[in-house]
Image 1: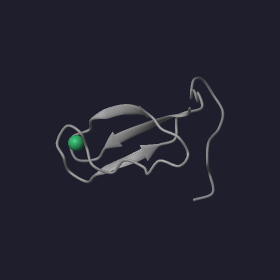
Image 2: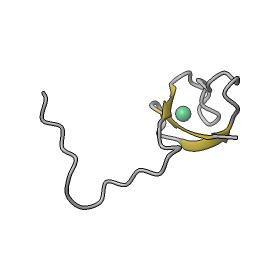
Image 3: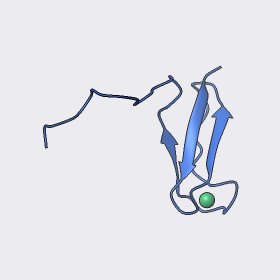
Image 4: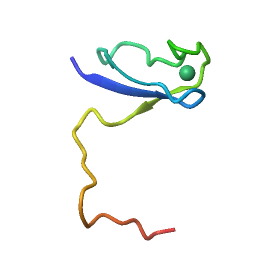
Length: 58
Ligand SMILES: [Zn+2]
């Protein structure tokens, strides 16, 4: 089962949730109960160490 990473834009609460693909994404923060949670796509380990990967197409 994939683990989804969420972050609340209101209070900054950071949490992960085990959900299946059929589950609805979480939108309400379990901490401040505001509907300001959004999914952070970090289920796949991504590291931004060192050099490389700059987006210049601004
Ligand atoms: Zn919150």
